[in-house]
Length: 181
Figure 1 (tube, rainbow, N blue to C red):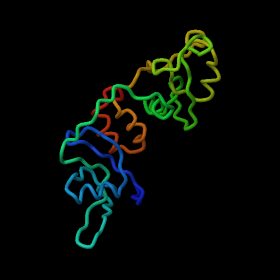
Figure 2 (tube, rainbow, N blue to C red; figure 1 turned 60 degrees about the vertical axis):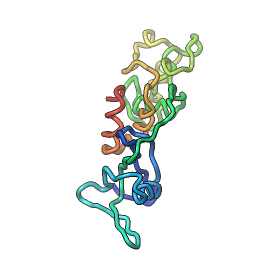
Figure 3 (cartoon, rainbow, N blue to C red; figure 1 turned 180 degrees about the vertical axis):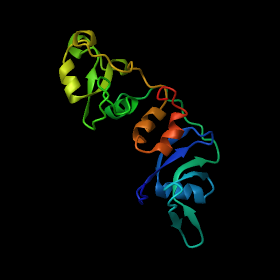
């Protein structure tokens, strides 16, 4: 993994609950002000790049944890967006398992048949599967989603979608996301 100046860092609450991603600059400021501690370093054991300042040197963080617990407002509902839906479905076609980057959104019960645009009726689908299913019901097309579409229970499901290429981040996000584990 190459460390770049515009890298992102996973920010955990004091309880190790994933909160969000912050810029590398923000993460370093939090560590230098003793508001956070470095939990994981970028580069792993092989290469440990460091940030050097006039009087100090610290490893590039990959995951940091706040020293004090931050109370967050309860988020009862995650808005249904393309990005959050693809994150929920782990960027995978729910019909064939394809992980193509050009996924579409498919209504399990087509809108032409009264299906609504809601979490429980939309899944990620690759173009060929979406065209094959068309405006048919799953039983008519003999195509069933691999996972039952549900409303995500945790905002960390959205973080998981952003962390899909980083195994270190996934470890921290998956431990608080029962639906994804």
